[in-house]
Length: 195
Image 1 (cartoon, rainbow, N blue to C red):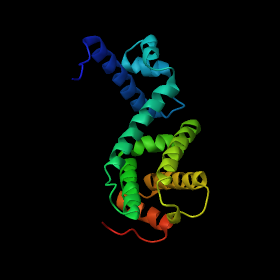
Image 2: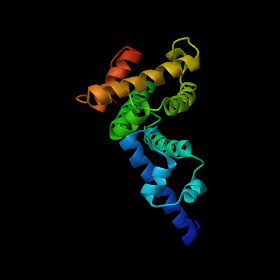
Image 3: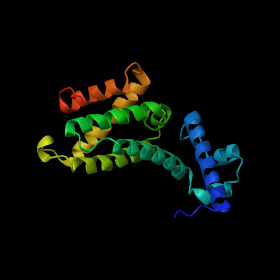
């Protein structure tokens, strides 16, 4: 039996969501460096003290936004059938990832694009590398080149993020499936098989 949150908890959740939504809007409008906690609270029509009940600082609220977005992507990736052949699964993950990047274009560009924040981009890159390392650990060794796993993970994440930014900024005529197929071909050295 799930315990329903009381009125106080529901209000607290609504306030937290309002702060997150306001921070996201400001982040997309002005970029990370240009926004302040005061601007977030002013636009949300809340006091600074209320902000600090929910978040330590600007970095924490923005990281929470990014983490929510990554969690959405992880949930989509988990839906890819684990019983599929490895190459089809890898291609499927890249298709889902590029589609997610396209759907969240503004957020991807504000983190990784020309106006992005290097600290936030590096933190997210490191987070994706850890996820990639975990994924690569279950890949049969003969499938990978004989290189250190952390090297491979950094290469794949770095390449994928730079390709995503290039695509979103300069080549929107390509679909997520086309970008995933090109990335797959560059990485695996042949076209993906459908399945």
